[in-house]
Image (cartoon, rainbow, N blue to C red; front, top):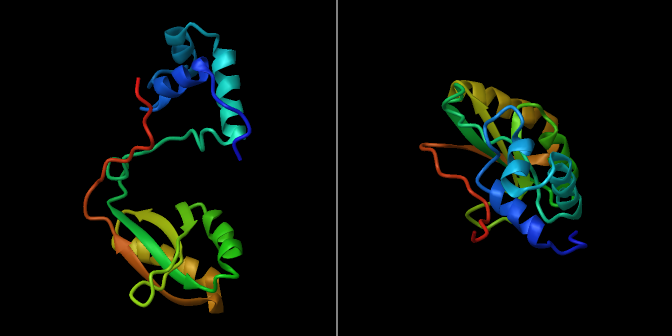
Length: 162
């Protein structure tokens, strides 16, 4: 729900942070100095943009391989459409699920509508986590699979021109 427009300062803040926060002890202070703002204003503006939906999140994007998660599996689930939102919220709340979302089916080849990413040091670890999800889904689950990553893809969101 976007209920406000960005101004020139918001735009400069988005451009300054869209590639990531500076890896320093006080990143908001560094951005503030770069833009000629106070750190409080940087944090207030980012908070306001989050609350209004202009930006969706501020968070770390780890290199899974560098932290020892060499098996990365997107678990996919076929659950009743009327239950997918409720079940997705429960799956997304699990501490080992990094992201969870609903997607439309592509029948007949692709019956899955609930996706949940899990990571582990091995495929066996990912499979065990998928089994936990399966237990939570219970009879609501009509089918599932795990799609394992084979390489790291560059993750970026929308980028504004500088």
